[in-house]
Length: 444
Image (cartoon, rainbow, N blue to C red):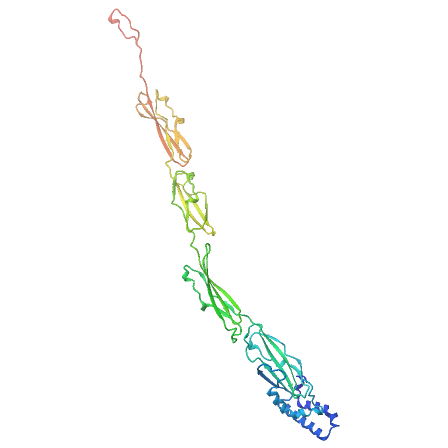
């Protein structure tokens, strides 16, 4: 009898029994006929109180095996003794063992608490009479491996009939679930002092499967500190948080504190004064840096920041860029100011001339000294009488020479020209001899 068939009413059962037994009644005595009637009446009583709906008993214990008849089954068989006695009339077949047509499918579940029978999926046939007992053996308790993945629990379904025959099948529940998962790790960050690197277990958040399971819910939290030093990165303080459940599954996260190295600084020498712009000659030795790292220096060309190119007062800027072995950069600036006395002109030496019209400026005789390879033009002023009447002996003339360079710097010097004359000379007539004094007259 299938599980579907046992839901039919007692009236149908009695009708089927009557059909099965009609041929036998013709050959049996009145006593046998009476026994049949008694058996049918008993069956009706059973159906009224459970009948074709089998008695289902769930036990939290291991299946004892087919050779053990549970007390509940023994009581069931005792109550149905009248039905068993009807076996010779053809109503039952003591040798027909119940058949399980479909055992509930094995399942993969998350936790031990999810392990339980699914008797609604059990399909079976009872061949001896129509009543039976289904005993379901569920795990007596959680195993040592609890709800750890791979743990198997067995639910055994045993179908008993009125003849004391039984058959069984096992439904396997395999546990599978995720291990503990860290959902929030304590925050680290950049610090300024090692004392700021502090772990914080209270800020660690995690989840785990099967909270009612002693293994899955047994979470061990371990914290390990790792300190590292790097010349470029500085010091790092890493707290490794490890959570482990009773199944040996782990998850980790890290809380990292970073103490950066000191910032690279570079120092330039004091500003300098040079006579000429081409005297600016910066070198790597000009700068010094903080720390002990190796470094390279990139020096810019001098850049005019104020004043006129190459002229006194001009200021030039030189930028030193330092890059250390960790690729950190720092810069400093040094200023150079051009200062010099400007051009110097030397006039030709003083001279003497006989006449004023002999006075001519001697441009070629001028000597000019300039700083920084400057250039310019020499100009001479018109001669000026500074002493005497200008034409007479002893008169002094001055010629002023001026030089102006490209920066507008000027210099001047003067040359003195003196009139030097011997004065006029006269030649008297030849001496003569005269007779009388009145003959002595000038011979102009």
